[in-house]
Length: 267
Image (cartoon, rainbow, N blue to C red; front, side, top):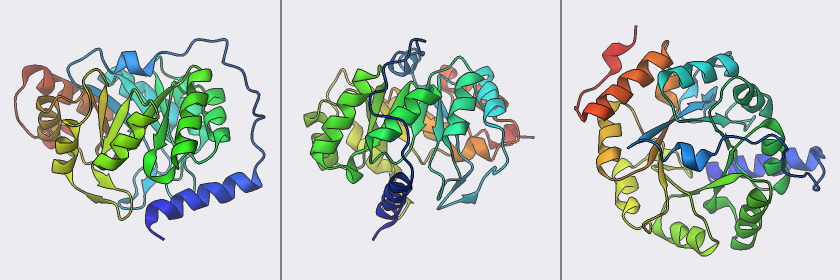
């Protein structure tokens, strides 16, 4: 069993022990900011991620306050926020998601390993604007059903793919927002060039988000030149003592189109 399936199986066990919300949850009365619209406002939008640890990098910021991070990301110029909610491998929670949503006016992506409709309902109740769906862990029928449930609840769905066959499956189910992951979630190796190559296979008119592998401004410039609409950045920001400053530096470089590494901007 590869690592991705281990995580998915862990989520299935979690759900078997937790009833979660009922399945008749209605769309929220309070309008959430639109994730899709937010990431289309700039040449390359930045989605800043809150995650406490990863299987590949280990602990990042186990005791970070999600609300404080969310505010720093917003002040730094992020277009949206992503929150890891998976508990066993990433030390996340839906409480982190709620705290981020309550402390920022930006749309929030619930980044979980969704295998059950209840996770979408938890995300909606916690204030998410968008939910991540990973094609590799979902049969076609489940993917299509979960996409439809997101739409019923007024949520965007960022459908994550790693290879061309997965992209075809996502499009066949009606995905209208694609995330391409440069990290192979079977073993967590990163292939940045593969991400850029797959971008060209996405039909025009569908926004595309680059996920994983971004280390500095030079990587962001490559993604901007390749035509991505947004880039999701997590580890580099969680390791930064001044994530808002780092984000502002990246935004400046993207706007100028100047190639330089910005690691020296951290103090």
